Image (tube, rainbow, N blue to C red; front, side):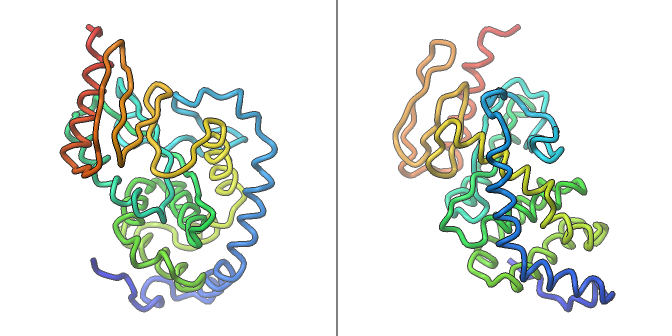
Length: 261
C-alpha cells in the first residue's frame, strides 16, 4: 500500500493548519481519554435497545450509529471493533464482501470498543468519527483497517500526519482538513466513542471483533452456533476464510427471512 507521506504544505499551506497538527498531536491522548471516561458515567445505557440502529442524540454527541450497507436492510448484525485490532482489520474485508454478496439484505452496524493496550486505538477512532462528520466514515474506516500496519505503533505527531493524509486521500482533497483535525479532539467525538463503549460494556463485550445477531454472539475464530427462528446455525472458523464468513452471513439472513413474504 502506498504511504501517504507527501509534503504537508501541498495540502495545508497555512500557519493555522500546521499549528493545529502540532497542538492535536501533543494534547490528544490525555484530553480525549479524560473526556471519554467522564462521559461514560452520564448515560443510562439501559434505556437503549442495543439491537436497533441508534439515532443521533446528545448522549452520543449527536453522532448516530454507523451502518455498512443499507440502514433499511432486513437483517442487522452489530459489530464491536477497535481500529488497531489486527483481527478487526482482517474481518473488515470479509464484512464488506458479505454485505456486497447479500445484495441489500444485510447491514452491519459498527460500534467502537477500544482495547486499553492499543496505544493508537483512541486516536484512530477519533479520526474515523471526525471523518464521519463530513460524510466519509465508511471510506475512512476502510482506510484505517487497510493501512493499519502503517500507523498502529507511531508516535502522536507521526500518526496525526498519517491520519491527516488518509483523510485527504479518501475525500479526494475535498474535505475540510482543519475541521477534521479540530473534530478529532472535540467533545462530540469523545461522547460518541464513550457511548459506543458503554453499549459494549452493557453486554459484556470482552474482545474484538465481536458480532451479535439477535443478542447472540458470533465467536468468529473458533467453533460456535446460534439459533435463528428455531434453526441452529453452526460454524467452525478456525481457518475462517472470506467465503466461510460470507456463507455464515448467508445462512443467518436466510434463517431470518425464511418466514417473510
